[in-house]
Image (cartoon, rainbow, N blue to C red):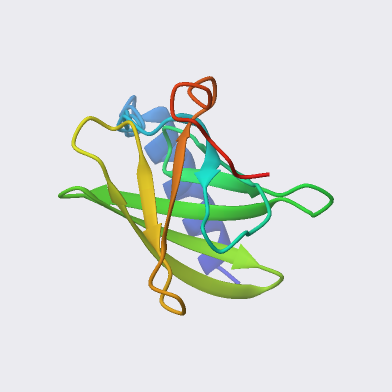
Length: 127
């Protein structure tokens, strides 16, 4: 029982010490991306990325699915909570950060996302 006050005191001291919290790393992915092309005909969805390394997958008529993300070397990994199951999905990022591409393990086809507002110039067909 003496451990709880010690832990609380340690946390309070660290907060009062003036040590700033780590700043989120600004990712070039921050913002909303929409499904643009999907040869497999999947439901149109969107991915919203926040600077703190998390985001949400949104689908019409479905609950939002939260995710954590990490990008490195032109690759993007999403760890998504989908109805209580953890899914890890890997994307590639175009060098100019204009597209996020997902290759289907099942069909080998490639779908891609673009930033909101870029649908017309990318001739998006996803519905």
